[in-house]
Length: 54
Length: 528
Image 1: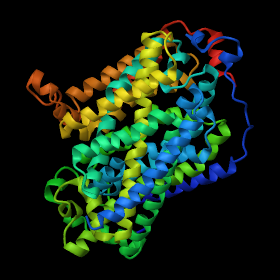
Image 2 (image 1 turned 60 degrees about the horizontal axis):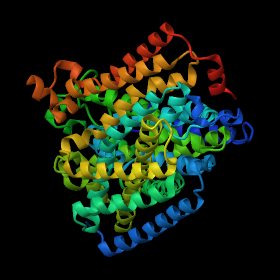
Image 3 (image 1 turned 90 degrees about the vertical axis):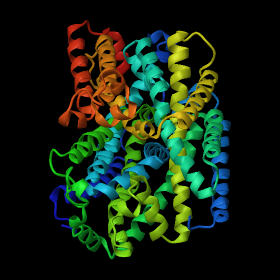
């Protein structure tokens, strides 16, 4: 396959391409996924200071 | 160097002007702690992806691992797959979204702070900060050396001066502009790296007659493997090393698993998940992150391996011989010999960008670790000057330590520094970080025990068992008169396969044996 005899190498070679393409497809499909959440800290929202977490 | 220094000098100057402009933008946009530490939590997905990738891939990843592929072949392509699947997909989609959400819920601005607040432990935050402060300068020192060596050979600047110049330039925009400056410049540097590697990829395959032809030529070279390498498992450049051999263990345990999985717990990368506005941004970043890592790591390793075909055609020798036996010189030698002059200039810029982008992220993370996590939160219990001021001082101190290390440490330790840091992060942070995000039952005791077992287990294995680091450090020899206290295959097994499982078991056993954290706190951490 692709001039490489050892399947352990050509599988890796193809997986590199497929995983990169997979990332493109995933990113495109999920482009508008989820909602535009507001940034808000639950610690701060609860009226406490960040330090009170400890 | 094949190219005219003045052309390269002008290119570097233009590049530096743009870098300083972006650094200035970062300075102008920094108004509060969230801006300085987390780029205001509103970074664009493309900037995130490029910045994450550029910080991840340093000059040593391109030159060092590319050279490794030149010497040992394409087996290292499994690392590329791990880098894309684990380092991008799993990292962004699974770890990233939870890290961002929990970071917002707890008001955390650094990686140690996220874990510390999740487990309500200043000790965890302080200890993690101290660990980063002690060990990351080693890693930064090695990147600094790589960048300075480039400036020495390409621009004819004396090495000692090059280390200083590089450190001062990066320090200037990191200290003033914080993470906004770091990520903007990273994105520019990532863009340069992306273009450089695409050109290298296309030119290499076309130079060697096409994809299949190039691979076939490389496959048919297997009989040229030097005897000393064949004896430790090298079977050719398009086949895996012999199962269980020395080369196989190093490739699979240290490189593919150590670096491939270790990346998940790199503080300077994990903190980037908290810089975006929402989960949607993280998912969008996957689109550019995957191809970016492929173009960096994938191209470097494929080209590194294929350089053997070029050197056989032109000089009748394999790459390792063409580079005088020095793995780190394979890629530079290939670029200088096989590529057109205009590209050599561009590629040198690419390497400078790769070094600077990794350095800036390291400096920022080390500064926040010592200034904010260790000093402000752990030592002073949060009751001292503002985070930004103390972090600036922290960055300055850790840069100084890195520069000193770059000058004084023996080359043997510096060469192992990246592996040491990755191994330590995987053992110390990964079990605790994963538990923090995915297992509500994991409590403070379990996390503390896991952090300590992972840290000291990993340090013990690196110092006394894993041959490459143990012999470079020399502590085992000084104490016991032997390079490693165990022998045989054990000396090849990476700490990630020993210390990380130990830390995982510790986390589970101790958490289950002790009282769970309060329900109210857990709900606050995991609130959607």
